[in-house]
Length: 395
Image 1 (cartoon, rainbow, N blue to C red):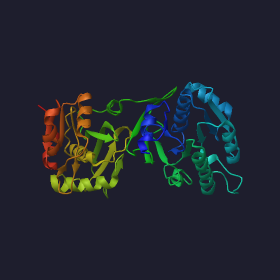
Image 2: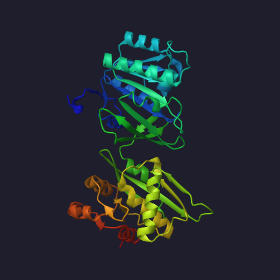
Image 3: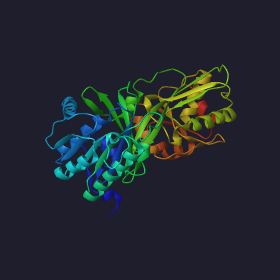
Image 4: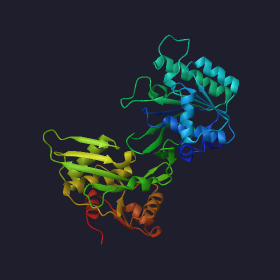
């Protein structure tokens, strides 16, 4: 059987199904991790309601809330299907006993840190308890062919006995990310035995729960400043989805040892590209403080964002804004060359949909797709010509 042929259960939450690779696989063990209060339980409850409405019996075990507290939250979210069964319990043996009695199609445990087994003397949440409980739930999932979803809390420093402890046990690891002070959340996978690890799902936190965001580019660019140096839009591809995001950079005078701060992008990549821009483009920023941020809490990992990062730094250093209707993408090498990247059609189509007019991209990519888009494509071979095109106003 091929992976694509594996039976899957649709949760009814399209963004979650996308990240899972098409839905829950029978007999799989899935870990949903994230910081406390980020919205993991809300997402899980909405997904379980979708499964129940699809004709599947679901058992939701809460170790942190009573049945009454869960019912109040479910009422606020509009979750009330009769096939969604709720159990408040922390002892593993009793959880498995109820699972055997009710025979659910899906079992969810919220959270794994609250579960304990009588066979161990350690406290709930310890490494031993978490591993033993997860191992027995894995056995239940495989022998009964029932998908099991575990919720795991993780702090910013990784957290003792958090999801990191379980990554080698489970079939899929999903992380729910975002700032609690902001209204949007990003769901991404770092491990998936039954699908891609590149897909992301985007949600907006509302009073009545999480709402799916079908057009993330519009969300991430909604508050983009216009005519401000240090702001550049790049076209990224996460899995099968193109997303336009804003990279911001601020170059400031240093009061001592130059500082480097990077949010949403690899700090080592930032340091490497700062050396390239100094050596290959003659913009001296190595002695200054440089702050880089990917707006909206998105994390960029593909090298196609290199050109946008360099452009944002150069724009801030020179005090010249990039035309708001222009975006860019391309990998940058140590020799200052701009290299071609993949998924060009998806990037250009998303840029056209969002109203952009110009795109600065690798010359090799421009020559291949010049006749397939209405955008003005500006092909560049090196960092110098790229910055000249980006920091020159469009006519």
